[in-house]
Structures are given as structure tokens and as C-alpha cells.
Amino acid sequence: MSKYDEKAKERISRYLQKNCEQVRLTVPKGTLAKYKAFAATKGISMTEMIKQLVQADMDARGFEYEES
Image 1: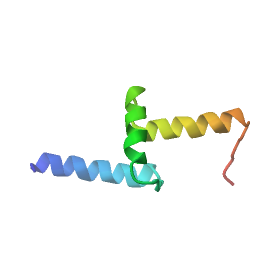
Image 2: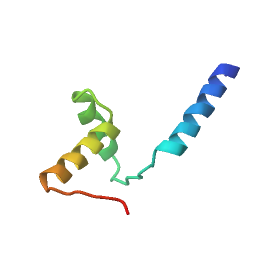
Image 3: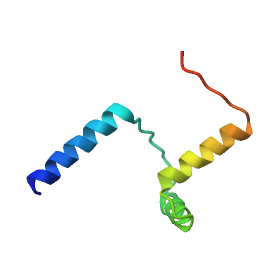
Image 4: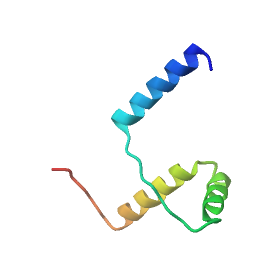
């Protein structure tokens, strides 16, 4: 890997650590491929699909959250 690629990888890693959180999802074998395939039919990543579904459910239920 070139020096540039390593520096870019480090910058991305620092950005993700500072600005993002991760969620781990455990599903039965075979389910992940099904979720990814469905997301692909919508032209989005599986991560984006899950975020959209959760947000739509929260919006439909009028859920609002404020950190204290």
C-alpha cells in the first residue's frame, strides 16, 4: 500500500472514531445476504437501509429524543 493510502486510511479512521458510533447486529445465517440484496435493489447500502427503516419507525411513532 502506498504512503498516501496509509495516511488516508488513518484520517478516515480518526474521523470515524470521532464522529460515528457502531451498532452490531446479529442475524441468522443467510439473513445478511438477503438484507444486502434487498438494499441493493433500492440502490443503497444495507447500513443506509437500516438507518432509514429505524428513522421511519421513530417518525411514525412520534418518538423524539433529547440527550441530557
